[in-house]
Length: 456
Ligand code: ATP
Figure 1 (cartoon, rainbow, N blue to C red):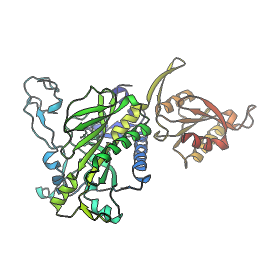
Figure 2 (figure 1 turned 90 degrees about the vertical axis):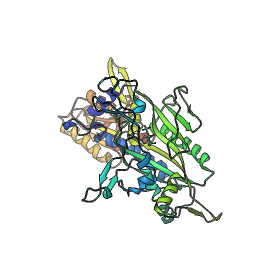
Figure 3 (figure 1 turned 135 degrees about the vertical axis):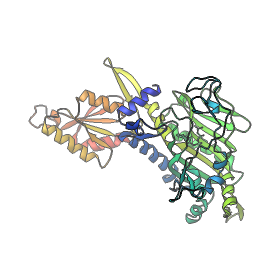
Figure 4 (figure 1 turned 30 degrees about the vertical axis):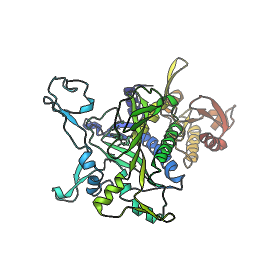
C-alpha cells in the first residue's frame, strides 16, 4: 500500500482532489474535488443510493436542509455534548484533542509544560440567520445529516404510508470544526455523509443492529472490492470493546457515544492505521424521544395490526463519503514493473472508475484516424463516460489511463481508419487495464463489447 503523500500527490497530479483555496495557501480541513474525483465520488454515492434506496421496498430517501432550527441541536444533545476536551498550548496557542497528546510537550512548538488542562469546545460551526447578528438568530451548520431524518419521521411515515420496520436515507454535507484535521480527506471540516435511520419495534433492535452490520460490511467489500485483510468491525459496547476480523489485539477500550446503546464501527486499514469509515449505531428512541419532548409534537407510531403505540427504536448505518473515496483509492492502487518500467494502476471496480473508456488515435496528424476516434467517442458517450485524448504518445496515454483507473482504452490506428492501407481491416484495438490484453474488434461492435465487459 502506498503512503499518504504518494496518494495526495497522485490525486493532485491526476485531478482527483486539490487543496481547498490552494492559491491563497489553502484552509485546513477543506478539500476540492477535481474532474476525476467528482466522478469517483458520485459513483460511490450512486452505488450507495441504489443499494440503500432504489433496490429496496423498505427504505425511502429525503434531502433535508443543512441549516435547521437550532432547537434540533439542543434536543439531539449536540449543543450540550458535542464537545471534544481540548488542551491549548500557552506558548503557541495551538489547540489539540486531549486524547491525542502523546506526552507533556506541545506537538506544535515542542515546548514542555505549556499545555493547559483539557477544556470543552463545541465543534459545531455557528452562523446567523437573517440580517441581524444577535443571539436569537444563531444557527448551526449541521454536524450530521441524521437529525434531518428524525425531524421528518412523521412527515415521511405518513405521506408514504410506511409500516415499521422501515428506513429513511439521506446523503449530504456535514460540518465539524474538528480540532485536528489531517490524513488528507480522512478528517475534514466539511465532508459528506450517507446515513440511514432504520425504525424498528423496541425489542427487535439487537437483531436489526446485527443485520445492518452484516449488510453494510458486505456492501463495502463488494462495492469497493476490499480484501478481507483490510477491513474489520470494531464492536463497542458499554461492557467492552473488541474486534471481529484482522488484528484483534489492536484495540483500545472505549464507550459508545451518548445517543447509542452500542456501535459497530467498520474500520479500514489505512496507512495511518485502522480507522473508522462507517459507524452502525443502535440509537434506541434517544432522538425521536428527545424531539418529541422538546417540540411537544407526537412522534409515536401506531401499529394498525397490533394496536400498539410506541416511539420506534433506531438502527443507523452512517458512513463518510470522503473516507470511502480514500478507501477506493488505497484499495485499488498497485505498482508493478512492466518491461523494466514502473506501471501504476488504479484497479478500481468498473462501476466506480471515473472514466470507463479512453479513445486514443495512434497518429494525431492523420485526419481520418482522428475523425474515426472522435466518432467512436461520440457514439459511446450516451452509454458510458468516454474521453478522447491525443495529447501524448500512445505509451504515455496508456500509462495516464492506468493511473486514473480507466478500465478500457480503444486505439484507432492506420489499419482501423485508412481503407488505402494494405492491412486495412476496419477494426480497432481494445486494451484491458488490468491484464493489458489487447483484442481487435470491428468498429461497429465496440460499444457492445465494452458494455458487456463493463458489467462483468
Ligand atoms: P471519528 O471518530 O473518526 O471522529 P465519528 O465517530 O465522530 O468519527 P460519526 O459521527 O459516527 O463519526 O459519523 C459517521 C461517519 O461520518 C464516520 O464513520 C465517518 O466516515 C464520517 N465522518 C465523521 N467525521 C468526519 C470528518 N471530520 N471528516 C470526514 N468524514 C467524517
